[in-house]
Amino acid sequence: MKNYGETNFITGMRAFAAMAIVLIHSGGGGLRSLGTTASEFVDFCPQGVSVFFVISGFSVAVSFYSSQSYFHYLNKRIWRIAPLYYFWIAATILLGFVAQSKSESFNAPPDFWNILAHLTFLSSFNYRYADSIIGVEWSIAVEVFWYFLLPLMLLASRFMGIPLLAGAYYLYSYLDQHTTSLPVDPDYAAYAMNYLPFKYVLSYALGISAFEVRKHIKHNGLMGDLAFVFCLLVILVYVPFRRHFPIDLQDKYVFSSLLAFTAIVFGSAESRLFRWFFENRAAQFLGMISYGLYLCHFPIIRMLGNSGIAVNETAHFLIVSGTSIIVAWATYILIEVPANRVVGPRFFSAFSQKDKLPA
Image (cartoon, rainbow, N blue to C red):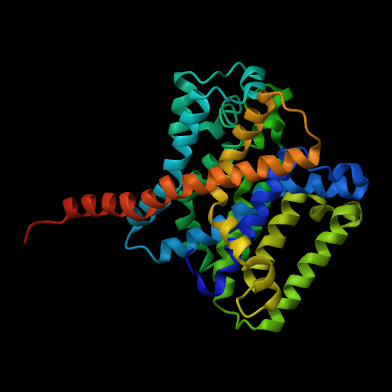
């Protein structure tokens, strides 16, 4: 496991975000039967994607400033994302686990144009294609889009941090309220808007802002513990009483993005609570394989559904999560590690050598 020092807890945050998404997609694990409040907690789980986006904004800032050049930075990010993504695109098609409900709803089979849109990370710009193969891949296209633009936002954040956040929130609000302006069937306009990368500008702006703000804070254990307790209590109050919050915060996306920002800004290795919850070995392990866990769980759900085995919701969640963890661990070792630590660096070295002029 890679040691990120003071921000090791972010790996654990990835674990909780990934498992929340697995929980909602696998039916809620039986929690809905416990009552309305438990069901509302399950309905909050999709916001794990928002947490991933904020973390991605922070990670991109760290990656960019530790890179030798813009190309070096992009090379690292693409090799982090593409190999496993391409693997699951191919595996899902070849094994016959394509997201049939979505591809059939919009007449979007995995044909040449659909696959090309996925391979070029442009699928999120066409709502018919966005989730039509794996079932969750729209967010990967969103991430790659922002990989190209975030360095510009990083530079802007150093001179106009608050105006940048205000502008990001304005853009999000404008897009959220003007879905009918999209050149698509009005019945699907809101659906299409949810896949566009621009709608998630606030999460990425908060991520890079967290990177900038952390540099000006002297972290200590008490501050981290108080931040953890605050975030936990706010979630426990927010989920059942969301309609009593200010109108802007009733938006789950805005709320979860701000909460992830708060945790990243004030979290530290000196906080016992952050260490206990996010830096234990289980959380670190799940966070390490969270990308593979996110990509593989939906095809596995369809595979289990096709098997015809009938189990209750709790058993279904346990089987899906257990199988997904094993598969994600295997693909991490066989695909992610070689791509990130061997192939990616060699690819960069080969091209950087070509750019050098002979002495």
